Image (tube, rainbow, N blue to C red; front, side, top):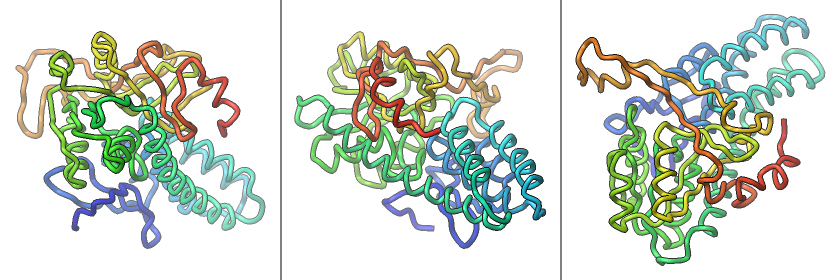
Length: 353
């Protein structure tokens, strides 16, 4: 498989889903074919597909695959079995709100679609495809709005990002890397600095890979180098993605984002979050209510087949942390860049359940 400059990690092809296997990047580029909802659930859990928007798209297709597997013509029984599919998919990644948003949308469509079971199934496929297409357009809008709020000086910016909020984390183009792509297109970007993002190294493996594909200059740094780089004047702006944003603007993103926001504040460097409206959870008031996924400690003590730590040591592996709203300059959405304090006033009425 050749590596295309445009990356689409979740595609519907020949009556099944194809996922870029992100666990094998950057050294290998391969597709995983998904035909059953349980396989989709496993792909989400094992991070073959990852990134909140991409997980939402994958879950929507997973709902259709599950619907296709249900063998009944009785509407009530079909909906009951579809709820079982939905619950399995909900259990995969607890922090990423796009997952729950997409499943809720698919369940609502199923409940509201009239006619035989076959009609519901076909409407679910059309809805999943619409979620997929809408996310690409949304990311392009985020990228363009992001460019408009980047610092005016210097003319060409050095931008630091954390984890991977790129095309691989969405249906395509990316959120934080959508801003990068748009800035590069407009001649506003000198270089990307990518935190390696321990323990799974999404920055070193995935963000760097995306930048290299498009010949965007990228420098990978370890997570504990950011403050030094800022003090040395190497960073002009920070842009990160998000997995869930509370109504007050508190933002859950990959572990290490909170400390990055603190050091950005200490150096008077703007800190932006780029995320679609579907990542904002207006049902929760603040970040204390966001569930934080804890993953296998093996991710901390082992890289590939190499064990880094002695047997007998203990480990703690939260996948996300919460950055307080007061550390965030603005949240860049498809509707523009909005101060965290204004999220509810400006966006809640646009939020579809």
